[in-house]
Image (cartoon, rainbow, N blue to C red):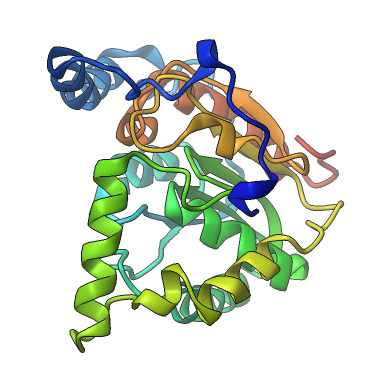
Length: 266
């Protein structure tokens, strides 16, 4: 979990934003729109070759600075494939991790009570960290998790621009703005508690897939490589992972495996 524990990144494998030109940064910012356009033209969007979800409940968790609408296309697609989706009720993902995960755990309990079976969790970026924490706390209610571009082993291994946004939110939260995490959540007792909980052993019987991209301009892709996970590489932008055809094909396979009554770990 802690940055100091991570190996030094080889020069040839550095995050893409290091030494990048302004033109490269501009093209990277435009990429999610192209990926979304490719998705709606793709056969996978229409369900071609995608197994039925069999009513598996799926809890969707958005990333930092995003809310449930950011996963609306994924929500719509999963419902059309036979899954029973549930949103996180996160309007903007900027709250204290501890408080947010407690609310998400309650949301999971409600979903599994209604469905009468454990649920899968799909989380993007910071939402994937939440998914991992909930799975560690309540493995009895989690059928499996898929994280999309989530810094699962170092939650601060992020682009400096995003790091500045984190500091701004923390400063506003510390100044008393409600609903925002504080400095203590970034570097303090709350952050230490988060690190300790993320370092707990992940339940071996819960399938865990971490999707990462070397062209991720938000999270250092090395931080997505969790020894406890099945780490799967895609060629996608960070934000675009929730609208990328390749990711949808992957989700179609992995979630269908979780939906099977005697599914082995995906």
